[in-house]
Length: 493
Image 1 (cartoon, one colour):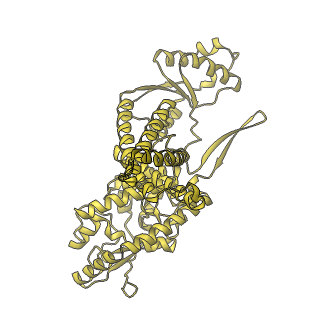
Image 2: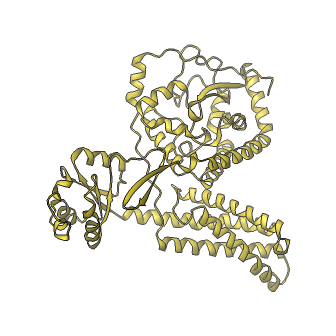
Image 3: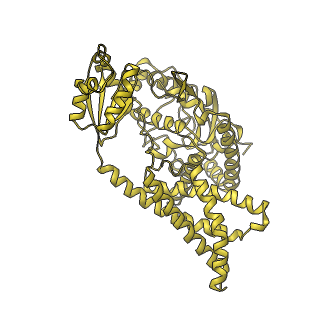
């Protein structure tokens, strides 16, 4: 492979202002993705109970197979001594990974991916425990069989519970009142991006503070306020205010709203989502909003992702060595052109790098037209190239970029400098996706179509920002497992 010629893309020509303006007009606004809903206590109890049952069944089936023709009492002895270890470690793993806090699964199939990733993570400490403490060691075969049965059992039950939960949530409706001056209410509603099941009631008061300016903080002042009366009459469960009230009115408002089964929150227009998280701290009598880096941007996350990248990329290149050689030979025999193609992309912190791909288009495809947006029916793509793109096999050389440290296995898809310049002028938060290394696969790549329209860029950005704001090692492993599964079945078709 080292001897192959790798052509670089043609330099970007100076695109006309009209072309840039047209592209900018086609880009839609990036609406924020809905945060994953947190589990209630009853949901956690049901999930934990179902998981324990599946762990027990999986361990017993594994013990029965390992014991073979031994007596039932021997099978029960092995099962009872190992089940405690297996179940305890898997439960702690699930809890630490957040599987009892919320779910990022967008479908029942995704639940299987997340469960499988969590179960595989839980096997690692068990193998370490058996190595360090041989006295508690059980059969490795039994552990692997328990894992296989648990993948099927836990994944299936969680998928069924996901379907039931989605049905229940779809039938629920919520009424929210947004209170404030007209401009702030409209800005807050756009930023909040309420789900379709939510009924939003606008209460335009300009300004809200004026209703309390000459009053004493008491219950009568709150219940006589016109906007509060209207919120109660509409049966609102949540009250969002776009302005801060005088401090002495807030505890009274919270107490009164509680009696009407309403939650109170402040949706301040100047405090909106960006690539940082906010902590509320109290120092003396002063409330402090303290911004801090997202987990995905911390040194620990960078270290863990780098270790995962090296392990996955090295394994992938070793496993795919023979298929890559076959693909390279097929491309070379097809039109005698170069096998690999280097294309300039924008990486972490806006640094450009050369991304490698198996060449899927005719030689010098962009020599005259320059960079163009990918279309579903691109006449420049070769016959072999269509198969490589459809199966994602053209992306295999990017594992070399991963080992170089230019890319990650999981992350936002890197874009070309020409389009980055257009997108960053139109979408204010576009550069935030460059806080992490770009990825071969990722949240947006798996949950959106591979070939996007220009109008999809805003939505794609919201998916990328969702990944940054909700990153975890479990999320990366689940996306890797889902990608490998879908690529395998796509290649087999």
